[in-house]
Length: 453
Image 1 (cartoon, rainbow, N blue to C red):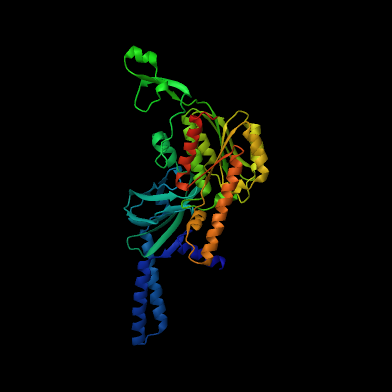
Image 2 (tube, rainbow, N blue to C red):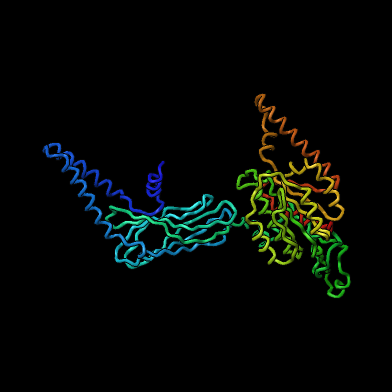
């Protein structure tokens, strides 16, 4: 394709600036040209007059351009959120101020990134010396920072013979952060969020934790915690209430290696991991703990030092919302060595990674054992649904039976490796993608309640 033909093609594809014939002009020209051709065929007049008349028709049609407003008479304004959550639908607005005296029909297209789902083109008409607002919906599907700079406009007069098109530069930076649905659920109702598979997590370990208050005794309370002095004073059975100690250190490790790019039903493993990491950080910060976050792959990508308070959650969010999968294997040894230099105090090391890859890191086992002497380690991964489905399928034929046996063997190998690692004091947990955040927060709360840290 030559440079000239490519430029003409871009104009027809609603790009670049220029003037293109409208559908109404093409239809009228075809009808007029056929009629002229038949007339000259029957009358026997020279054919050059047919070409002249068709040319005059096109020249007369150009008068339609006089009734199309000039582009400097059309003022555009765009309103859209600068921060969006992945997978959530938002509403954007484009306002057109028509400063001319002519009514204009218009079609709009936003230069949205390919990962955005949007309702374009927008069509409508704007009367002279008036303004109209066009509304559209957009839903981003990939985290990151994007630049939306162009607004493609095609407009025509009431006659609609010729159409003008141009590109307006209205630059805006949009941040697509992770889905905060799980975090919001926890902050709104922590106990409801912690309900997993119908089981309630114990509020605290018996006889441990910090004293909170004295309240009325209810059925199910531990009789050993009855406050006899208050009971005698108020002539009513009263009991002491405890809660877990706060002010602990939580370090969240996010694996961004190659295996975290595996596709799931919604997004990939890294997307679900980042969502779960933010939900866990929110739970820890709400309980008064200090939270640090470290993202890694082949090298250290992001490190956020530990801090308290819900304001720290926003800092974590802005630091990890654009994390991407690296096409390299994760270097666990380097991240552990780095962690020992920056985290001197005892903390809960919560690693989000691919368990199958992690279990085959024999070289990292020594580093993890050394890390276990000072810190408490917990790893959370996402179950491989395809492997489980293949292991459960029926052996309908030889091929499926072979696939089933291989899948079952892989599951058994994983179980044996998990037992070996857990014997070293390294707890490994797997969850399906829908309950990853719930599982991570639930295990964090259980560890805090049992006073293991």
